[in-house]
Amino acid sequence: MNPNTENQSIAEDDEISLLDLLQTIAENIKLLVLGPLVVGLAALGISFTIPPTYTANTRFLPPQQQASAAASMLQSLGALGGLAGAAAGIKSPADQYVAFLKSRAVQDPLIEQFNLVQRYESKLKEDARKALATNARISSGKDGLISIEVDDSDPAVAADLANAHVTQLGTLLNRLAVTEAQQRRVFFDKQLQATKANLAQADAALRATGLSTDVLKAQPQAAVTALAQLQAQISAQEVKVASMRGYLTESAPDFKQAMTELAALRAQMGKVEASATTSSASGVGQSNYISRYRDFKYHEALFELFAKQYEIARVDEAREGAVIQVLDAATPPERKSKPKKALIAIIATLATGFVLLLFVFVRQAFRNAGQNPESAAKWQSIRQGFGFKA
Image (cartoon, rainbow, N blue to C red):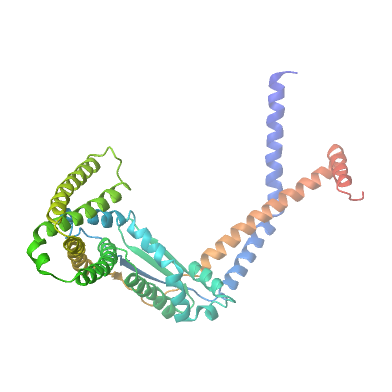
């Protein structure tokens, strides 16, 4: 067969197929035009029966973590500050506050305050939480602001619910240690209470020894006080080394320096202990007194260190504060956000037109198949395969 003749035949087949498609559209033009218009008008009419939804929006700046004024003071304490500082350090504060807003600690008070179980027609409180999570959209932007959008059929309720999210977040932050200063304050508060109890026990043990002329002549205060201070410094350095293991390797320069300082303190401690042991060898009662006096001075020095850092953390917390700065408070919206009637009508019209166009082409294909003996035989075989009678 001549290639030119074959190409001409293919072109004629394509032309005939295109003409068939246009003919099919022309024969069903009324259905393809009037059908979508009717459905679009019906969808527009139905959209008027849908209750309107209003969206209220509030934006606020979450508490910002500032550089602590205790940064320089922590150098003197070393590891106690290093441990508290390592416990702090939030990578993404905005995301953390978004998680707080989506937590049950915030949602449950809102459900109770606005009676959302009944308002959302929920059977269980868990269902009300899911409905609230759907109606309240919380997000953080690159500008550091957190946005809360709340949908409701009542514009006043939408605004109140959006603002209540911020209020409940503030209440939650008052109970949690979120900022660096708050975490240091909680850490040193626990250590201070434990050291206070140990100091009371050491004081009671010291008083139980009684005082004698021989003991007073020994005058152990100088040696024992130095020994107690060294013990407190060693304890602080050991805590520092333990905390540094969590975020530094043993080959890090800072870690090596901390270990060197700890070794030097322990060496100095050994010399002072040897001197104290020699001085206290004059009697059992005197040695017992000196040992308890040394424990008392150790806990006293440690208590003073913790008390100092605790007060610094409190000052930093008061200065920093978990202050939520509201940029745009939610107000009752004047215009509804849903339903968008025009958009509903357009989507319904286009979807109906596409479905009807597909229906017309499929119906015409079946008709053409019935007129072609070969296609009719294939169609008959398909019908028999699915169990349909001829």
